[in-house]
Length: 171
Image 1 (cartoon, rainbow, N blue to C red):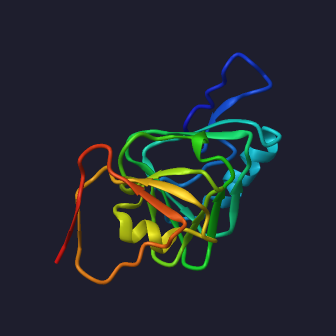
Image 2 (image 1 turned 90 degrees about the horizontal axis):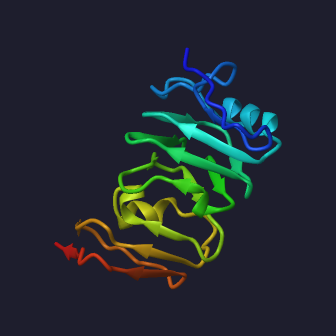
């Protein structure tokens, strides 16, 4: 069992999604959406969730409300099943740095207009475009070099920025 970590304030607890009774599976064999929903309910949709190392399966539509934040530890991420949506109402609520955090084929990630996304979170621009739900106006930071081997249309609602000198090679 993984311990529950609580900040001293009772209003904003900080709890691992693997803590009892939430018990989200870091191997991705079992859907973690129900555990995250239970944690959201316990915290009244406010506070911080710690996401330890592991790839957690999201096999049901899941919304992360504005008042919730994720502390994504190194090596943590979500595999979103085909046809399912992980809706994040506040992308600044994800404390994750660099590295892939969204996995899956056919799953979607919903973010609000004005969000800033990194290509590394999706393992590339093509995956980001494929996983982005409902055409929000977003800024995408190219924070990794990428080779595009097939046609890729970047919709007008996506502004691409390369402040780190990363680039895209077509071929």
